[in-house]
Image 1 (cartoon, rainbow, N blue to C red):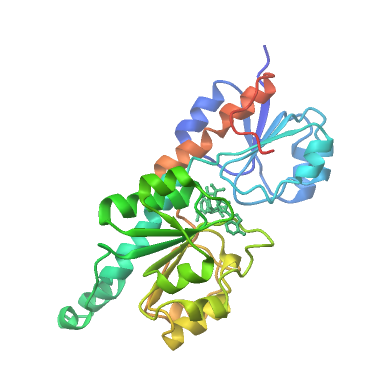
Image 2 (image 1 turned 30 degrees about the vertical axis):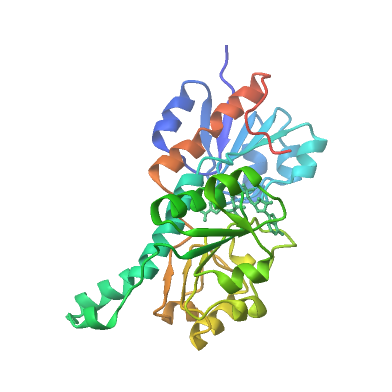
Length: 315
Ligand code: NAD
C-alpha cells in the first residue's frame, strides 16, 4: 500500500519524525510563501503546521487529496477553518501537550521574580557581592495568586502553587470550575477584586476580541505596588504600552513575560531596559517533552487519513 504524503511546514521533534516516517512519506516545505505552498500541496493528504506560515483557502483548494490540517500546538488562527469546513478538511491540534511546560514556566517566573534571580546573577557577575544586602527577595509561601483564565494551564499553575507553596488561589473566568475550586481551595472572584488582592497575577486566557488588552492601565492601577504580573498566554491580552508605564512608575513590582506584541519584540523596545522584568522569547511550551508530545499530532493526522476519529478535533 502506498504511504500517504504529509507536508510539514517546519521540522518537528526527531523521535516523532522517525515514528511518522514509518507510516507516511514526509516532506518538509522548502518555503512558507503561499505561492510555493500551493505547488507543494498538490498530492498531500495531511499538513502539519507549527508557529509559522498559514493554511489559506487557496492552499487547501490546491490540494484535492487533503483530508486533515494539524496544528502542532494549540492556536489555530493561521488555518482558514471556515474554508477547511467547507472543503471537508478536518482540523486537529494538541491542546494538552504543553500544559505542564507552560505552567512550570509560570512558576519559574514567579520564583525568579520573588528571589530576584536575574538581578542577583547580574550583580555577582559584575563583582557586586554587596547585592546580598540590597536585593532582598520574598517568599511565595502563603501569598495570593490570581489566575485570569482557569482552564487547563491556569488550573495546573494553581495546583503547583497551592500544593508546593500553600498559596491562596483566586481566579477570574467566564466559566466556573467548582471541582477545581474544592480541590485547590480556589475562589472565583470578579476581575477587579482579583487584581486588588493578588500578590502574583498570571494570565491564562486565549486571545479573543473579549480578552484583547484586558489588562490595561486601569487594571494595572488596581494592582498592589508589590505585585507581579506574569503573562504566558498571548501578548495582546496585556496592553504592553500601559505595562511599560506601570513598571516604570512602580505601579507594580515587576513582570515575567513570555509573549509580546509584536513578536519578535523589536530590539529597541523599552521592556529590555527594565530591571524588574524577566523576558523569554515565546518558549514556555518549548521543552523537549512538550515538543515531543506536540509532534504526536501526527497520530490524529494518520487517524483522519485512515478514516478514524481524531482524539483532538478542533470543532
Ligand atoms: P484553556 O482553553 O484550557 O483555558 C482558557 C480559559 O480562559 C478557559 O477556562 C476560558 O473559559 C477562559 N476564558 C476565555 N475567555 C475569557 C474571558 N474573556 N474572560 C475570562 N476567562 C476567559 O486554555 P489553556 O490550555 O489553559 O491555555 C491558555 C492560553 O495559554 C492559550 O489560549 C494560549 O494563548 C496560551 N499558551 C501559551 C503558550 C506559550 O508557549 N507561551 C503555550 C500554550 C498555550
